[in-house]
Length: 453
Image (cartoon, rainbow, N blue to C red; front, side, top):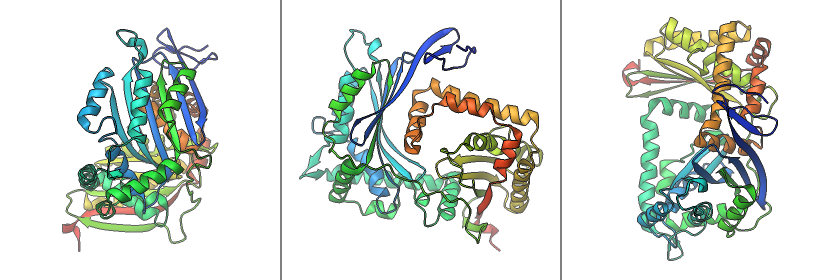
């Protein structure tokens, strides 16, 4: 058994040490119905229990908008609780539980569903069971929606359609986020990854109660379903509660796990340069690199994770310390991984006239990584940040939900501690070899209209 003060660690008995106190943490993955898998985290760490139900479907421009809208419409009402007021009353009866709509993408998989948080049974005042009614309410939202004339309520569809359009426009208003979306769109033209998780405004406008209902029926019958639970209840009880809650799911043993297309190298005409002019006062320089096919499923992935931290993933990285702090070429400069797609994406904010200098210096820092010019302080500082981030995932139910959803999409069952141990073993030589596989694919520069010559 290993004990580190202030750090979660698995031991050989699947226990965890936290400042001298042992918290149990067992993770079980089990298919409880055809095409329906449960990830159950049994722990006595938290006072709340966390649930999730997610439909996994291939990201596609034709269906992404309807998929994105679906969760918010379902959240508006059920057969037994036909409006938000009655749903809120049901949540209040369960000690003020919360259910939120989930719409995200992992690689080229669109994930839609709900996450929920309820008081753990161990802390109920009168010892009443909360698990079963909480799971039942979650199942009710997904499987027994409020309908009118055999389809979704026109009022609910109209209202949530307008809200979704607002969300899409809000993404455009955040120019840093917009530049990264545009980079992915340009970099992955013809690939599903270029589709936004919320779909497109024009397609959202075309959705009707009938078309959304038809898409809903298709998803229920064909999409892979991931269920999640984190709390103190025993596995058998959790499994039984969720089986009952989702018993109305159509039986289909052919539910397929969506696949992600991974390009090993950029196209022959790379790197491509894309410029766009908008009414902005600060330029946004985004750069996309292919990882040579390295994804979360590969043995080289721990080295890629640590390389990203050294290059641009932390406040001690080469991009932050050199491009931003030392040379003052960027207002911000960072890098991140799309771990299922095999991409490293660089994001930076620059003065319009400093575009070329910033671009060249970012690439120079990458070349330094390729040559293995990584100091001991850079390596160990990045390592500690990555390892601590992985281990503190176990402190947050929300972060665990996201982590295990990503693992489910990737088809992996490795926990944060197992990845942390691998990160501990990565060497500078491995980082250099991994950096040598990175190839620049696309450069996207968002500049102001007044900068047009």
